[in-house]
View 1 (cartoon, helix red, strand yellow):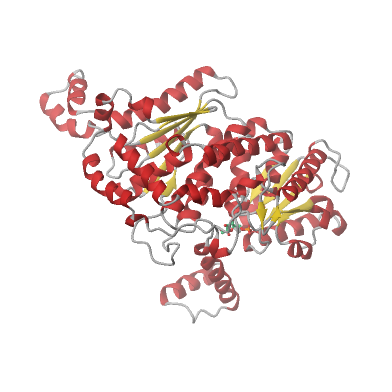
View 2 (view 1 turned 90 degrees about the vertical axis):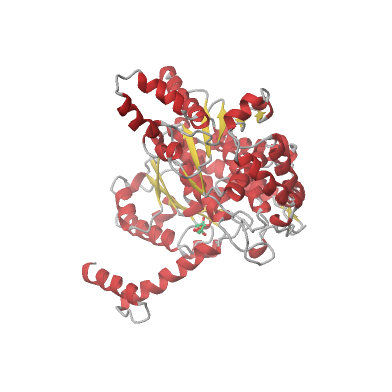
Length: 547
Ligand code: F6P
């Protein structure tokens, strides 16, 4: 079934939300708590090892009801059914969107063009498992018969960010293999990685869905040249494997057919870490842990598919985000994970959210007359508290924030953990409550200051508060809980795309830059700059002079 094409601003829920906004805009979340003692019990979802509190938001019971009405009116339920059943919901690329099938059960049936894709998925998973075990346990060795010590993932965008983030997040579960990621076409990136490596003990995983991406092919070619300075052509088969949909191009690159891990067009790059694109994850933490990551995601998939919307984590988070984006005019959202392991999480989410929902043409082909994709940014707590929290607390912009935390410390450093989590909680409370003039005055009076000094300082020390946060609290960082967390955001992206009536699974906006880069490369090589504007010509001349 095709997705609905409803302009959300024409729904009665949207109009009701617009009228309702004026009343809520005046409210202070603090007062909402004092008026309703059950607020925190009403606005939370407790699910498996997740506790999601969304009560520290500028919403009332009526706001929540109207947002749920909006979900209904844009036919979210029907869209979820289409999403899971392999309908062509990526219409502009004529593809299904089935990352959910990648973490499904072998007994599931998911049809694409009338064919069940589950057997193929499990064949590739079995190949990944065998390969991972052979490398990790040392059955497969390098060209000088030494066991592998290092793995280099060569890819960019979805072929890099997902695997890199998961490997970093799960480093507690890592085995003996060291992993490296080469993504940027900047030759200094690949050089810095290669200088640490021994070709005899390094495995290279080239990941590219299309196998046409300039960065990945350039890096892979440079790495193969470096490798061949030490080894022979026939050794390439022992050290290079590839993940792609484009088997022909992979073979043309010289990769042995047995070393190709296939993926499918119905997996979008930024949602592909669950496929063979996650091979580096499997190598780094073992196939069992990779499978647990998938299991966690599958649990979230079922929650999202089956749970009523008012108790459905991705739906609730998406609706709240729409509320701020479209009614309060908030432009960005911060994602603050109180775990150093998750230090690449916001970077990873940036592609997921912004490449998916950074669109301005609706599903009818018309320019939208409302805001779509939010800007995503963030760094782990507590570091970010000492960097940009000033702006969130006292700046002029409204920045809704997701606070992610884990109750258990993986290394059992209880003292650190208690301090970490007290910061997490303190920040959400401070953002909610702020600090009133009366409180500041009381504090300043204890500081031996004159009345004039107090008067002068007072306004700078006041915190307005009323800053919205969601607290996503999870028992422990495990492969399963990480799988759930990532899938939670994937589904949030989906819900927002449905509401905004856009196609979330294409990325034509990235392709223009790719085309232009190759034209300019030709001009740089020929030295002919006449086809460019004056500004670009000057820049090209500067480059020509100093390159
Ligand atoms: O950045 C655009 C993009 O197409 C992403 O969607 C994708 O993840 C990335 O390029 C890499 O593409 P590929 O896996 O085909 O090399």
